Image 1 (cartoon, one colour):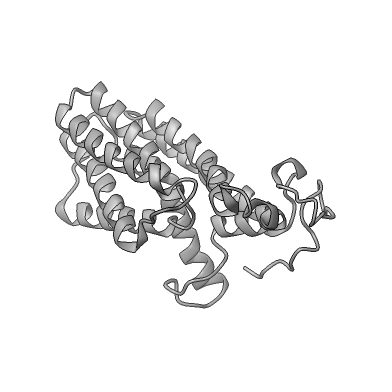
Image 2 (cartoon, rainbow, N blue to C red):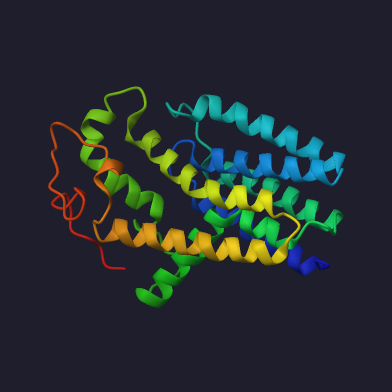
Length: 248
């Protein structure tokens, strides 16, 4: 399936923007980028594309070096410029891999970026269709923000006094969410049908997680508790009285 020049520009621009969208907490976008790069390196090795392997290793080394200072203490930050740069480089490598190797399905790249891409699309739908606002307006209802407020905010007083802080504790939840899409992309990189099915399963998983968090139906074992801020559960011990649920 050939990719035309206009498709490449749209794909690279969209994927770079998606990485910037999820750059909300220490280490979140950086580790997502590393997961994507690891998958690209593996598949490029499978098809014998040494150029993509070498370029990906260089970018991965740079991102890893950044994470040494960024996570968990947040001594430096990507910012919009850094997030777009990392997003552009990773997106370009994914598209380059697909263009140079016809055995790699284009759906490999889409599923590989499953979490940031769907976060971007769902946010646009939520704002435009459900709220009647411009998709470009910022809000506090991204999944990573809800996880921070609903799963970590009750414990933030204690957590922010530690070396890690509630900011850094948010990112691992999203790493785990993004991992299934990356693993499926690696397993089915040359099978379009299985990649499409895996993407559908991932979207369903995201929606279930999002809905449960919005409705305060998070299992109690996922909520970080604080002795100073005990929580009464609505379902399974999730936070109920901390804040009112936002409308979506």
